[in-house]
Length: 240
Length: 336
Image (tube, rainbow over all chains, first blue to last red; front, side, top):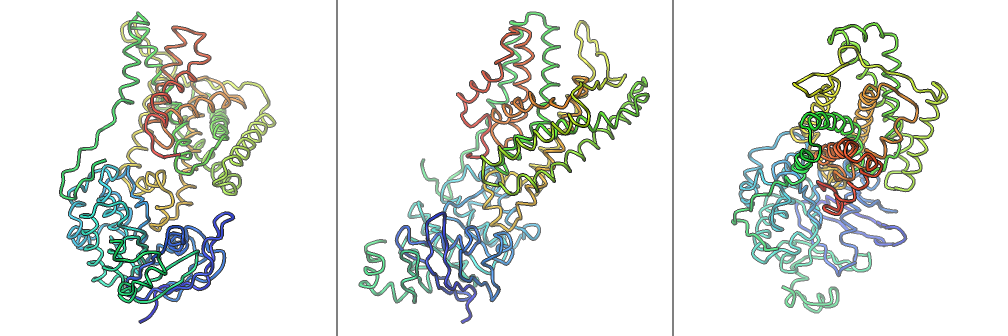
């Protein structure tokens, strides 16, 4: 299986802090790769560095064989990278429709794609003309993900989509993301909810102190409790 | 906050109309205080005209402030340059300005205003590339650079045209007043009000009905996410900066005709005023800026009539009162 995204020896400094300390990772085409790790391990920084929101101090980042580490964020997005930040970052002063119109960079909204999105995010259809700022947390997350998939993307970077959401909404969101996976999306996802990680992940990367300390299949990690405890400080079973 | 399920109906967003009602309330409260209805109408018309001119000058600044997070203390330079350009252009056409025909007057005035906007916009391009670009994200340096730019612009105007006040008489057809009973409303104030309303409507249409407007509104709220969606916001910044500069130039022309004079430091007092308007309105909010400008003008006109000494501090008192009510301005757009 070919790698869509590859990071080699990537270092990122934020101010005087050395956050990423030589990241090597690969995300295979059509796979969902989970990025796990304790708080402060550098997971969000990794996504932001790939997206060009924080510049890598050194190292190489390539997308479909093309070097992107020195490119500006808009150029990286235009190469087909969709980004769902931890904060969701919906434009609260704009309506749901306006948020998606902006996300559809290459032209008018595609009706078939919208129908596909509405299929698993029906709330977005209902609140089409409502201000995004008045949506609930779960609906904002749906909008944030919808924004990333309103046009076909090569790669989706999703940062903790289930964070702070009610369990029922988390389940709905997992089903949505499974549907996106089934459509062949390549996803690199940061997730603290181990249940969601196990349900969605094909591969897994575990970070600690700005480096990748484990890479393998999600199923293998999910079934290896001692490994979970060693890498994450707790087991998936105790953290559902 | 209670979490809503996806199937729950969404509460209807409340329309925040309190700031819109504020100038209306101020105007109504002033009726018994002023006593004479005709004086009240004249002062109200004067407030609207002055407010529109201040709005035109401040609208660009609020977008630059809100969208780009740039503290442009040199915004007043565009006002002065716009006024001087119009003065220069109009000088050879004095005969046309003195003709007693509105159309002949406007045929000279309109191109002069457009040229002033073009020159101010072009100056904005240079200022953004030379002074602002190296100091994005550094507020202290922005203040120093743009204040320095303002001083250079002012001193250049002094060096070229001298310190004297240059008269800019109103065209003949815009002199005098419309008389409605015992109410006199200056013709130029009516024109200024109409232009201000047209600018407000145009900005609102662009911001609310076009993708460009969506990008600007989104950029005011979260620049980073706009970039992550694939839009080069730097170009948008430049466009907004140039538009803001051009509007300041237009405001300068209108202010020069309103005061019937230009001088190199004409923007000094105006700069303070438009910063107050931008802060009162809420950084980045065109609607807030519009209401803030009208309020500032109302306080200046009503206050100047009722308690002339209060005029010295009225704007500061207004700003304090508004910020005590709404600490982020009438309509908060950004979290800055």
